[in-house]
Length: 187
Image (cartoon, rainbow, N blue to C red; front, side, top):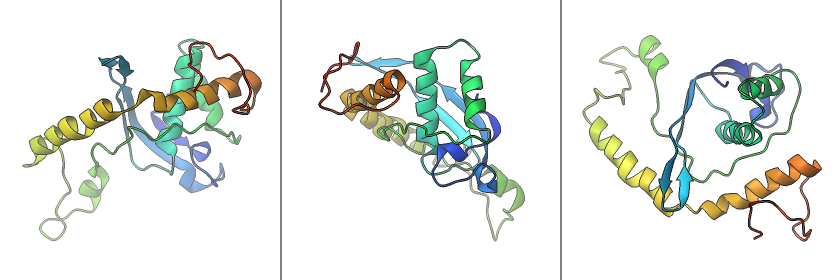
């Protein structure tokens, strides 16, 4: 649903729908198969785009999580996104940044239009790069294993709890309110 050119004014702050800076091009947004590590299920999301706005990825993940949680049918994510990228201004939830990292920079446009060896060599991190294998090993063995191994799933519980409150009541409740939340332990 995110793939293509859309106006992402609702996915950052202080940006009007008609601002040229709101338009972004997303090449792909893919979810890998869930993996269970310990007693926690993890899903790797890969987002490839030309440029991103402040908090854009975190809000995209929050929208995807909400669409998956609510499960309004096969077309629901696309319909939801259409409503968020038109002229309306909508306040979106911000996914916690735990586990978010830049996996690899992509310089395809720069390499095609600006690079001119030897003065301006192309910027390449793909499989042909001499350090590619070492970079990939570091990404998987250090970065991703550190996120999964050291990640604390309980850190996301307050955010899920907040989403539930906003969905049911239309506003977040006070932490002192004793409202039973299904399947979510009270912190």
